[in-house]
Amino acid sequence: MNMRKLAIAVIAMLLSGPAVFAAEQQAKGGDAQTVGEVRKVDKAAKKVTIKHGPITNLDMPPMTMVFQVRDPSMLEKVKVGDKIKFRAEDVKGALTVTRIEAAQ
Ligand SMILES: [Cu+2]
Image (cartoon, rainbow, N blue to C red; front, top):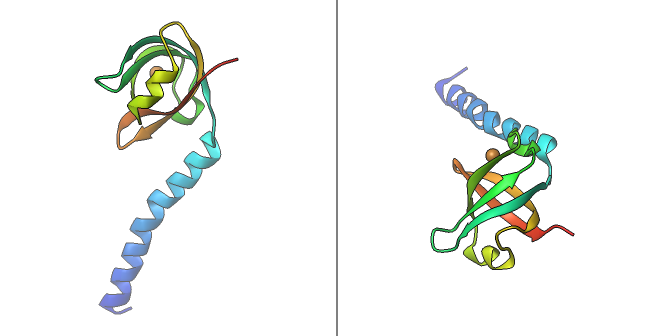
């Protein structure tokens, strides 16, 4: 194996790691939504505090915690005390709400 082929093989190995991980995450979490209740809304900081149920795609047990929101306009749809369904994802290390809606 010449150096060029070796380099390509190494790069292929490095690239396949995250791809496999992403595929596993997808299989595990899919498009799962989580139920919760809004405890605090901070539009200026783009943050929302949610008492949430288990978040299957993040392997997180029920708790009350602060999330970033992807877009502050999402916070106009909810207020403190609302029961919600939401989708949380790890966006570059920050736990972020990517979808939120009032639970019926
Ligand atoms: Cu949590």
